[in-house]
Image 1 (cartoon, rainbow, N blue to C red):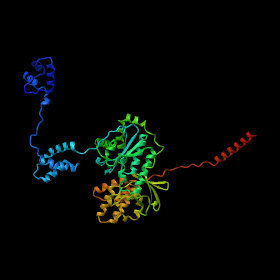
Image 2 (cartoon, rainbow, N blue to C red):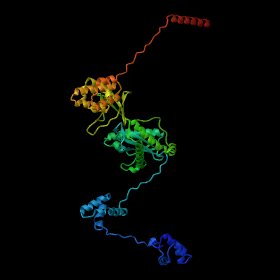
Image 3 (cartoon, helix red, strand yellow):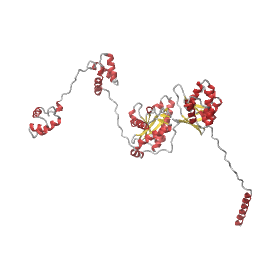
Image 4 (cartoon, helix red, strand yellow):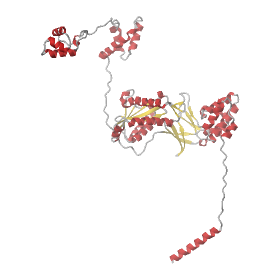
Length: 510
């Protein structure tokens, strides 16, 4: 048809028909004119073979600089970015048009494809069932999780089987420590119900950082003992080469996107407690594992059995309790019941908690704290541990080192600051301490805080006497118990029955 170019397909049809037909008939069947048929007879190349490559529509702006300046830069600094080359050219030649960036990118990419350095090659691996399990930590701060309104600084320990894709995630409150690895790995293996032959980690780089040589050796031995307990061969990928751990690195992104989707559907990122958030993570991971049930069942058949029990997943320290009513562990001060002052506690250090023992007797579990910064330590304070002593010395509250951490809820701190604004520190300390004691004795911490906040919002100070009356124990009526004494004749009857029974037994024996 006029105005349309002959295609390669039409040309091939024409040549096929031309074997048995005349040029006019073959051209008609192929869909073009007789004149075109005669032109084809003179040149039998396909139309696509006759196209001349399109030349440049404008002069090359890089000609003056390419061989003299750009290529030497690329050879001297193979990793330099295109924008870096452009900035250097414009520094040398201020009149150079900045619009040449796309041209420069195309030319540099083409040059590197032909003359650039050799690149690393990723070798895809085939994984057999039951062979490889992988561990890694991933940062989850972008999720913006909060616990009771407080932002949760945390990450996830992530375990995954290379063959089936089974995964387990454990919320870690601290850094990438051996304790977090040991606890998370054992939780994963016991949830799985078996043990792979090999375990791969990322060299525990964060756990080894800033450790002395002796501490590194101790950590290496503990890791080897953990692997030996479960019969796994430990392997580590090279530091800084993420794709060697690719079977779990890519899974990090998928898991975090699944969590993000679930949080969007949930409508809020605030959880009432850490346990509630952990249950949420377990539910999302469980859904993902349910989609791989067949592969996981197949791999479970190839796993080694679990040992009889877990091994140590904590560190242990023996620490004295000072006259301050607590102890200092890793730059964090913890309060304990004052009756333990002068004793030495055996403290088991987990990622999120401390378990305290006096000898072999457990005396309490404490939330694990973290230093505020490199220059300031932290405090984990339970006001119930010190309130009895603070009632005797309430003015100690004014300059108490851990005063802000002493208040269990924001309302108590707000009350103290409001009372101090009225210029009477003594009254502020007395009232605040008495209210804390009331919260402890009557077990009404939350309700009392709500009453305090309501009064402050109304522009008035809480009435201590009224609050004591409000939260005092309800008067219980003493039940009337009528005791009816048995007649003494009953005991005489019992005695006579015993005598008759004794005579009967003697007669039977005779």
